[in-house]
Image 1 (tube, rainbow, N blue to C red):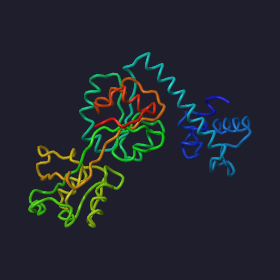
Image 2 (image 1 turned 135 degrees about the vertical axis):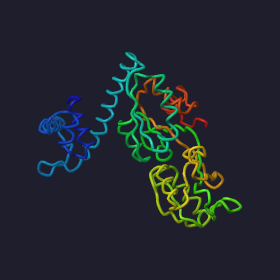
Image 3 (image 1 turned 30 degrees about the vertical axis):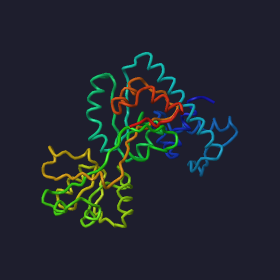
Image 4 (image 1 turned 180 degrees about the vertical axis):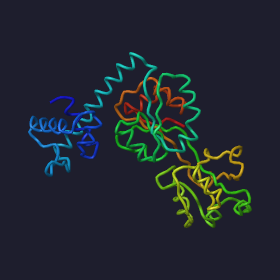
Length: 313
C-alpha cells in the first residue's frame, strides 16, 4: 500500500466513480489508476468498489471505511506540507474562499483590498455558490474557508465561527404605493408581488417564517441568487424586493427607495467555516480577523480545538 494508491481511490470516489476523470485530474492514465486500485484491493483482501463489467458502480461497505481513513491520511499529509510552507514562507501562498454572491459583492471588497495590501504574495481565489455549495467546497478541501449565512452552522466536519448579524430592507421605485402606507408591515408587503432570494440563499427561510407566523401567503413572483438581479427586476416593475440591507445604498441606488425591514424579520448571522483538524496558515488567521475583528487567532484556535465557537458578536 502506498500514498499514491490512496490518492487514486480518493479521487475516483470524489469524481463520482469515473476513473477517466480521476486519471485526468491526477495527470495519469485511466489504466494506471484502475491497475493501482486493483493492486490495493488484492493487498487488503477486500473490494473497495462494486463493479459492473469494467465500470465502477458503487462503493462497498469496507470500501467506504477505507475511503474515510484514506481521506484523513491525505488531509494530514497536506497539513504536513502546509506546516513546512508556513515556516518556509508565511506570507506566500494561495487562499481560496468559497462564499455567496452577497458576501463577495458587498461584504468582502474592503477586506480583500486590505488583505492584498498586507499580503501581496498571497493569491486570492473566490468561488461563489449557494450555502450548500460553499460547505461542500470547504468539506472537500477545495476551499480553505467558507463564508455564508446559512448552512455552515451545524455542517458536519466544519467549525462555524459567527461573524456579524444583518437584516433586510424592502426596495421599490420611489412612487410605489407601498410607501404611502402609514407603516411598513408584513400585511402591507403581502399585498404586492415580491422579488427576493432563492430558497438556498441568505435567510430566505426566515422571510418565509415571518409571513407564516402571521398566517400570510406572500406572492413571490421571482427568486434570484443575488441582490443585483433582484434590484434589476424591481426596477422593471416586476414587484417589490426584499434583500439584505447591506446590498442597498441610497447614494448608488438612486432610482429605488429603500425601507428598513429589520423590525419585520429575525436577524441573520453570517459565519466563517473552517474544516476541522486542518492546519491554518498565518495569513488565513489574518484574513479572518480582518473580516471579523472579534475572531482573533486565539478564538479561532479555541474553536478548532473543540473549545466552542460561540465568539460574541
